[in-house]
Image (tube, rainbow, N blue to C red):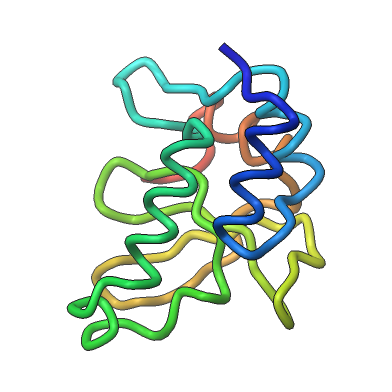
Length: 128
């Protein structure tokens, strides 16, 4: 079941950021997508909100990692790493997708857009 415009506005209010247009359009059509192994290629809106709040408020994470207020997580890699859009000056200004590595806290560019990211994930071109 797809997210509604009201759902998106509520999520944006909760997160304090406007979701990227590509992600908004996707969630209005389909609220998330899993790969053949059950790992999320795109999380449902509820999980996007929940996990981003968790990452930004978890006291242990504040001790271990750089701040997460510069990332909007929207998917998992299946190994603890997360895919995200970059947040700059409180908004998402780029369509690029980055991979956050949970082991070394690095943030690596992986795709120029959500559409390309989904295409590459489905084709197995992004290592997990």
